[in-house]
Amino acid sequence: MAKKEQDVVDQELPPPPARCSWQPALPEGFRQLNTQVAGHNFESSNAEAIGLLQDYTGGCVLKPLGKPECGERELRFYESLAEAGALGDNDLALLRGHVPRFYGPLKLVVNQRERTFLRLEDLTRDMLQPCVMDVKVGKRTWDPAASPHKRQVEEAKYVQCKQALGLCLPGFQVYIPDQDTEKATILRRGRDYGKSLSVDGFKETMALFFNASTSHSKARRAGKELLLQEVLRQLQDILNWFHSQRLYHFYASSLLICYDYSRLKDQPLLNGHHPHHGEQEDNAPTSPSTWVRVRMIDFAHVYPAEQALPDENYMFGLRSLIEVVQALLHR
Ligand SMILES: Nc1ncnc2c1ncn2[C@@H]1O[C@H](COP(=O)(O)OP(=O)(O)OP(=O)(O)O)[C@@H](O)[C@H]1O
Ligand SMILES: O=P(O)(O)O[C@@H]1[C@H](O)[C@H](O)[C@@H](OP(=O)(O)O)[C@H](OP(=O)(O)O)[C@H]1O
Image 1 (spheres, rainbow, N blue to C red):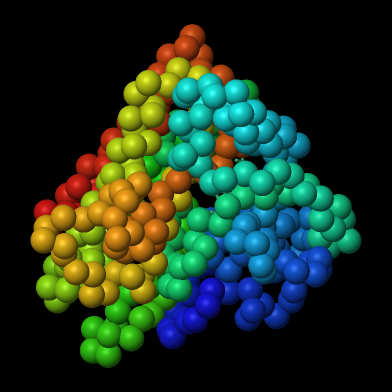
Image 2 (tube, rainbow, N blue to C red):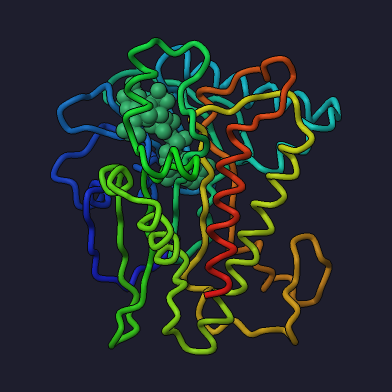
């Protein structure tokens, strides 16, 4: 992150890496991903447990392969997307636009052990004040090979939101303005917070994440509207892909929603018209797709679609998310 002007109000999530009293042994040129909000992470008492890394210069993140079968499945998924793109396969080629770019596997020694990482596009790159939310999609978060125990464990977590909305919230960070000073403060929440949420709590948390409270100035409301419309556009694009695809079923997969808080302030309304992704306009740098990114991540439990059926489990969650975000536009 280039600059930060915040007091840090951390809760539940581990503090930003620079403040840790211990440091994992990382290869030169890499550091812990300081915008990681969920997922497997480094543990001071377990050298085997590792989280995502960030390449100082390359604008990419490095995700360690998870448990043998999960890690290999995710690597195969990204590789098949890369191959399909080259062959011009339609549904797979389109899916590439909804996931981080993949730059191949990389072996690195971390905590004295060689591990394989996936090199992925950093979805928070160029963001000065990155707001990041990981939303796990689907009522069912266990895959067809899950043991009865794993299935039971998954069913017992995030119960309220998962059953009603088909969504779970394992973590997020957001910059919010201090009421009096307008100075930005960062707020971070992890899985324990997500597991405690009711449906209303989930909706309020989404309002908090999108800085969508009603008390903002006119200029801030314009920024909020632009943000929500862009998020909805990108979510709808993903849903459109799911309507046609019969290739995969995605279990325990997430949507990563990222935006740059520093771009939210003072966004002008261009005569009611917001530039869209891909539009060739002189003012292209202000296109919200440059500071708002919604992508699918975490493919450790992706399986071929059973009987070539649509992925109703994922689509149920995604439709709920679209409804929740739409409701924020009308607050
Ligand atoms: N391409 C990316 N760009 C930026 N941040 C990312 C990217 N991929 C993952 N992250 C960060 O890392 C976190 C964990 O990612 P991911 O869900 O892939 O890990 P995981 O260990 O497989 O998770 P889980 O415990 O749910 O299986 C995300 O919540 C996000 O903060
Ligand atoms: O939401 P939580 O409570 O963080 O639960 C974790 C989450 O379900 C992960 O998807 C899962 O990793 P896998 O996708 O690899 O199964 C992990 O299993 P693990 O603890 O066995 O790694 C769980 O602990």
